[in-house]
Length: 409
Figure 1: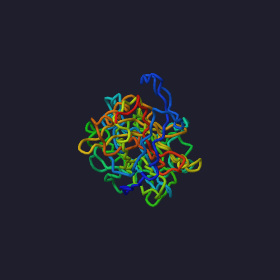
Figure 2 (figure 1 turned 180 degrees about the vertical axis):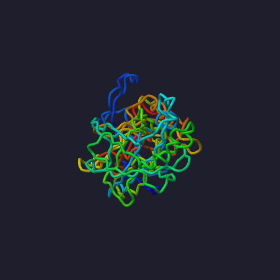
Figure 3 (figure 1 turned 90 degrees about the vertical axis):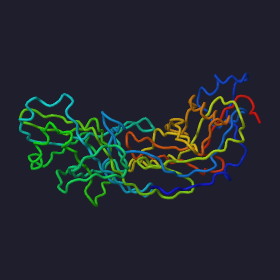
Figure 4 (figure 1 turned 45 degrees about the horizontal axis):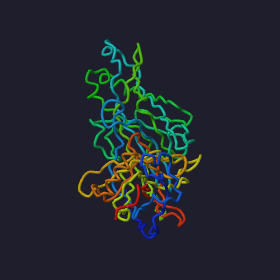
């Protein structure tokens, strides 16, 4: 668990509220905020409310799930290990359990001879904040990925598991392989002795309860240099018989993640996905008063240099979730935050978000703090480095509120 760090931002942002936007002369809110807010404008009907504190807080997340049938949904697994002095070293191992073929097994499958079993994994793609599509990797994209496969030895379900949970596996290594960065699909054949010993289990009508799947990980004491993502719905256990090759689709998965703490910083508060942590901010809306609100946005400035470069990739998160944390009830989802190729993280003036902040201004709702978390599906190591103590001439984390008329004091 990351330690809880707090930064007192009140001193830096105690200056008068920055005025940013304008309303039409008739102050009709339906015509306000239809485009992106110009955060450098200084207009009479927009005010900024800056964060008074920022900290890391515990938050729920998961790295497990189902590819197609079941909840939660999880479309990716991660495998590999990496040394990262900035965000902390990390390692990932995958657990994968197979379902029956979509079209079922042939009628004579119970009487067939199984000649080979293989695990087929396909790289997963992602779209970066710059709209580039590439294979998902954290670390060195040119690094090879050595892997070992072992059998899971007890029943499990991909629900209510900690992000660093591990499952019991056998001592025997069923297969080894080296996944190259130029691969898109890799097929790893399992030990023929294991195939012979487990043929009855694979043919059994009770396959779903008797077979528990495989663990795929880098060998102990090995640093692969990168952690790669694999698409669950495009990966299979291949079972070859003398007549055919059947695809048993991967369905139940878990990525077990171990992550060290990020390097301390006085200017940044950062999270990396796959940890049970949130960026937590406090805001004081009292100076705004009871005001009619035309539009609300939240803006978080980013240090985009932390995304790394061509030799070491730290994918920048493309989305985040903003939730309100009341003192005596469950958290409330307020907005999906977008991260584009430039500029701040923003809520983009969503109507529902504006209504939620209007409730705060009129006093029908209150939140102790506002948490920012990263999505759990697909599992990733995406980073979100928020600048919480910017230079004096640049704004920090804030709400930008476009008001209708003057506040009621």
